[in-house]
Every structure is written in structure tokens, then in C-alpha cells.
Length: 370
Image 1 (cartoon, rainbow, N blue to C red):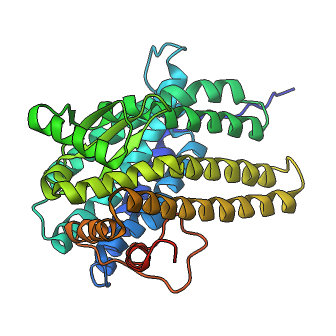
Image 2: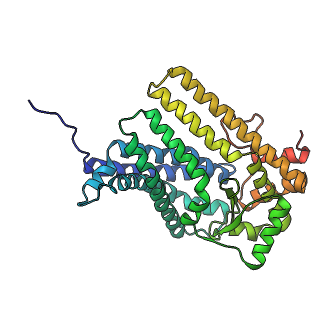
């Protein structure tokens, strides 16, 4: 009697699929960039292009390459790979391949962003930074997810999803240590350190320390506070320090402090994880399909509403610290630096985690209680 065994993954079809996905990414990025450049408020539309088109293409690439066994096929073709490293290398290769598709899709948009923002942005240096970030992030995620894959093979999809949820929580609270490994950072010294300390005090932003991200090429003036309570680290970009005076910088840091107080980031992560678990449970038949599907949709609606509410609460907090008119001026200045036109909506988008920037400015101008 002949025993039937599953054939091992073949490298050829997987590599061919990777080339096809890279081509798809290039086409999506080029066509999307050509369309976005002709729209009103192109900088804001580029952000939508990344989140709504290029990122899903990357997820599609990861899912397809995983199904085709790209990681096992490539790692299996390398002789003498230790068994303990095989799952980590397999995951790393799969994430890195998907990241390569993302870079291919992102590359055609660099020139468009440079033109609409009128900045000196080198395509080569931008892609080098993106490649460094992709390699580092792929390695980190592979180290975390590989044990989950080993433990969860043969277990329920819901169990594996819960493992991914735990990974999301881990990433949420260890990001202060991850970002310096993936991005070029420096500790502020001298007058910069004293200035940041004063700005944080006036803004009411309680963090343990501050690191500066080098963004002189991209000219992005952003702030980011991450970490568990008691160890929150503030990241500010070099452009933020150079582009804004103390009044505007304080107002923007006050908004960051308000978002920490209203737990905006935690709400977003929790919403995606809970909705994702319910969705996978529905698709895999782990419970009442339509009930779980409805639960997933309701969780998204409630979570996105809570995120928008948290942003408004953050604006209110900042208005109490420095004045509503100053916060409105800071948001207008932020939009100006990034060549953005503050958008406005007559009816809030229930599927958006953000409040339109123009609506936030109008609300501050009219009084935050409006």
C-alpha cells in the first residue's frame, strides 16, 4: 500500500510569485502616485494611499507567500540550518519578502511626495532607510512570532490569534526599546535638552527620557510617546525642533500628553486585536458565524468612535494647558509644514480612527465644548 505524503514546498513557484507581487507593488505605487498627485490635498491622499492600498498589497503578499511556503522552501534549500533557528529564519524570510514588496510599492511614490511637498528628498537615501527599518522589524517580529507558530501548529486558529494578540501587547509596551534599533536616534544635549525639558513641563507631558529622530531629509515634524506607565519615552523628530517655536511646540506636545491621558493608542490596538480575533473565529467556525462577524464590526465602530473621542479629549486637554487658539494655530502650522490642506467633513466617518484636521481646528476656534 502506498502512503501519501504532502510534498514539500517548491521554491520555484514561490520565487515566481514574489517577482509577480513585486511587479504588482510597483504598478500599484506608480499608478496610485500618478492619481494622487492630481488630487486636492495630495499629501493627505498619499497617507491614504499607503494605508488603504499599498499596505493591503503587502498583507496580500505575505499571505500568498506563506501559503506557497516561500520561507520553508528557501530555508530548506540552505544546507545545515540548525533546527532551533529554522522557524525563526522561516518567519524572517517571509516577513522580509513581504517587506520587499512594500519597498517596491513605496519607491514610485517618493518622487511624487518630493514634488508635492517641494522638499529635497533623496530617493536612494529614503529607500535605504526604509530597507534598514524593514530588515530590523522583520527580524524582531520573526523572533517573537516563530515560537507562537511552533506552539500553535495543530492548535485552533483562535489560539494562534490569541497568541498574536499577546504579541501585539508586547510590541505595544516594548516599542521604546525597538524604535532606536530601527531608526537613527540621538540623545538631546545642551540647549536642546534644556529646551525639551521646559517644553514638556509646560505641556504637562510626563516621560522618562527623550530621543531625537533624524528627519532632516523627510522634513517630518512629529512626536511620538510610547511605553508602559512609569517608562514612557518621547521621540521627537529633528524637524520638529527646527521648524516650530516654543509656543507651537508646547501646544503639539500638550496634544501628545492629552492622547496619552485618553489612551488613544491603546484603544486603537485593542480595537484591532479584539475585532481581528472575533473575525478569525467567525471565518474558522469557532462559534456562531454571523454573531461573531457582527461583533467584530461593532467592536470596530465602537473602537474607532472611542479613538476619535480620545483625540477630541486630547485637544481639550491641550487647550486647557496653553489655550484653544494656540492649539488651533499649532495644528495649522503643522499642516503648513507638511504641505497639507486641513480637511473637513460634514458627517464624521465612522470607519476612521482620526478626526479631520480642519474639524479639529474649527472646534478649537469655536470653543472645545461646541
